[in-house]
Image (cartoon, rainbow, N blue to C red; front, side):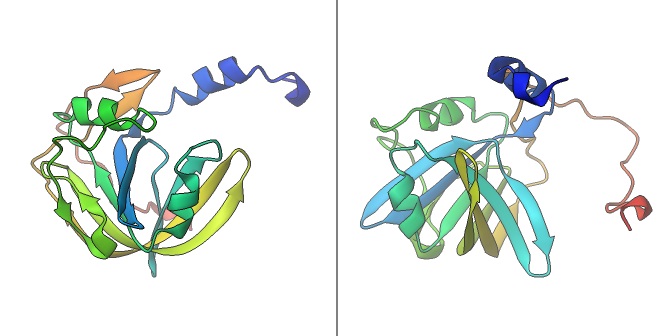
Length: 175
């Protein structure tokens, strides 16, 4: 395929073939709580413990994200679709009636999540139409009895368990 002829909608559809978990990243900046639903969360390093997420440059809250002294990455459970939809909207009253605890740097941590990572800023990098936020994990918790919320092909999907355990990661082929 000719790279100059990439159709943005077709590219987005092709990228949607890769299932992702659904997270809400949160922070508290200048006395204001900010949060947004993301699917661009990844592990980066175990030593030091780094994760990354990205935020669209057009996000109205981007200047606040750049000032944040800490973040919470809330990995949603499959029972939290409504919360995902609420925080996928820009601005509005997304915090009204939402329960949370204060984590590192007062970043909101939601109850019922599959996992939560409380992080300190490490670096921010250019990522085209997004900024890449690299964060160092300072604390975390994980609930193995909760199934994570997954998004693929433009919709939420359900994970199905298999009886075969996955091989230990990383595989030898990675080295």
